[in-house]
Image (tube, rainbow over all chains, first blue to last red; front, side):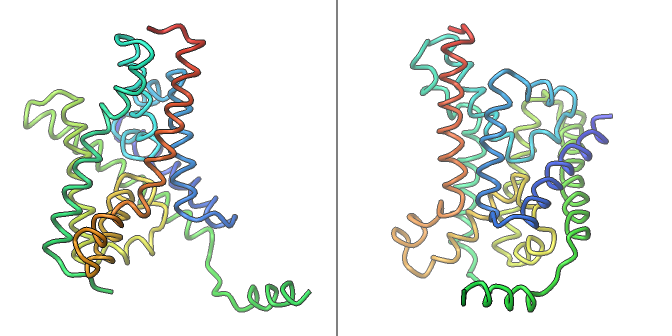
Length: 116
Length: 147
């Protein structure tokens, strides 16, 4: 069941993004930024957590999940550390993704040559 | 006056793309990536005896690795221009934008080329994500009664 839900959810988000891209003047950069903000907004009252419970892995892949993990880590830390926890826990859950992206891009840039 | 005329002529001669085909391609490719992600999580759970949260982290690492590698090998750009949002919205688009911008500026040196241009496209995602998370987190902290 998770497999079908993942297909539908991830595909639906990409479909919405493609419709926005085709019918307005917004570029891909605008759309990814908007989607991150939407993901953070949805997790403010734990809606995205419920989506992940229903959908499974398909909800972790789109860029909305990035905004979700940022605010989720911040709120988890805020529970134990108070106000400063929002700043301390911001990158707790996304650290793996950002660090991996930086390291892999750097290594592959050193190894490979650019080609057009 | 002249500009509107110019725009009209431009619109006439733009290459026409089928929006239906674009959206369908985005839906199928995006859905396939989500399907693959869930399949990977279940495979890691079953064969490597990992917990579900560990295997979802590993799944994201694998996707970032593959997207960076394919971008560096050169054929991911063609895939992105064909499938568009189907590959931009998943985490592959994030890795693709970082690797491609750092590859583009490689010949300007390690510091001013790679170092300062790696986040040229992906930086907006991180900045607006952090600002939005801080803003909504403050709202939740003030009215939600946590901590």
